[in-house]
Image (tube, rainbow, N blue to C red; front, top):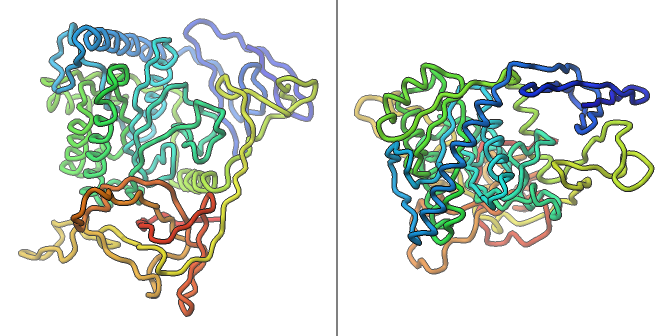
Length: 466
């Protein structure tokens, strides 16, 4: 492998990668690296012979065998067994439905992407679902969301703004691996403990929609699902009841039959004890290439994700990188095997009336745990109760707030109920950039033009930062 280092002039460097070795690198903020002939300036780079990839590859082979048996069974009987639990029989015809657990900075998302990309590159037309239930991750949309995306082409990992791929609203339409059509629900917060009941409900909503989608798709069902989870489900400092409730919600909603525990012996023992009799629990090693990510870094990434959703992205191509079809440099390039181009969006800033939007907040802005309430006291407001937000009231929390734009309620359902909006998926996001209380107007930023009159939005705790 050759590397060209981006200094004043790119100078070639050669790396020899033996079988089973990895090339690892770290980048400073604002730097970039292009890999084929590796071009760019890395702050750290080295070759490692200690790699977890053989274990991941062996795991993929086992999952691939499950997919093949499941599809063969479906084609032979025109019906696929989709009911848990997995009985551990090697001849079982169930496809892999995988839950990935692990502590912070263990590489869970990387494992999910590796397994997804191995599957779609297998040449069997697999289209597995990638489920993200980590609201701090952002997935293909914004932080604060949980999502489910059918993956039919390898996921690109070219930017931290979209570690699980980009939705079609913010990606070049000709790049198939980045034009995802995810089903998204708005949780609205970074931490899973902020409103555990709401997150539980949204996870189960995702599951119902995934199985409705796969009802008449034997190939899709055989492809399986991979669920990426937040680190709080594995953190020792997290309440056991909270952790177990959300893990159970994932197991139930996505009919999990394989649990992968990344580099955590104690958690592996706990999962073996709780679920080992009903499904396969496998401990896999943590890659030596993972790094510690602090809160400040994650905050910068959230800002980057939100900015990219509204304004698009410009890729910083390392100096000296050759173009695709011309003799010049930096005029075109390949990302993930596909020709890519910069995508700059032109968001729309619009002044609307307060009455154009129906704005809700889910539960009280800050809620003490039930155990902290006085003896015999009950909540006045449920954790999942939608509360109307009046933009005219000082302290509404709307200035610079990110609002999730919901799909319209089902017109076939004549009866309305208080928590109906919790079951409505997200169709987009807007940001309130100015509030004019005397004239009852506000300015909102949207990725594209369109009327917002009569739409329902939900307020979370994420704020827009220029």
